[in-house]
Amino acid sequence: MFRFVRRLPLPLVAVFISIIVAPGATHAHVTGCRTDPLVTLTNLTQITLNEQIGDASTDVTGINYVLHVPKGVRVLTVIYYGAVPARLQTLTTVSDEPPGVYDDYTTVYTATSPVTVTAYLSTDVLFGTYASGYNGQALHSHMQFL
Image 1 (cartoon, one colour):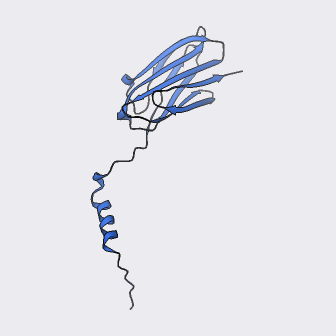
Image 2 (tube, rainbow, N blue to C red):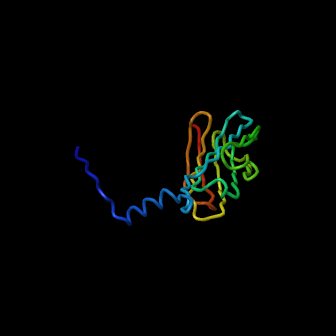
Image 3 (cartoon, one colour):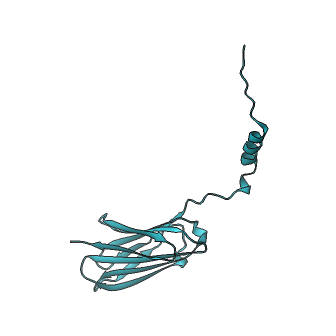
């Protein structure tokens, strides 16, 4: 029986072994983290404020939400989902919009820069919008129901 054996050059073998044997010597790939606060309003609209952050949740130092809602509408409940602890997230509600109009300004703060951020604003009726930018920027999302 004939067997074909190919020999790899020694430097290539050394590189291959170093990748397999010493994975801790390289930096881990960060896939990002996500937050998903769910805000229920007195007009029974549910708003979800999602952020896709291009960094580890342990590097996030704070998230500030400023949610503008229709006049006379207030927050009933806020439930914080996602990898970033609730204690690092603050929500300010401003009741100054006409009926059916919602605006969100989300600012994500991280220990390192630059970090990409996409902020989503959606409701329980599956309508949504988003804004993209970087940490430290107030990302504005706007929704209007007709």
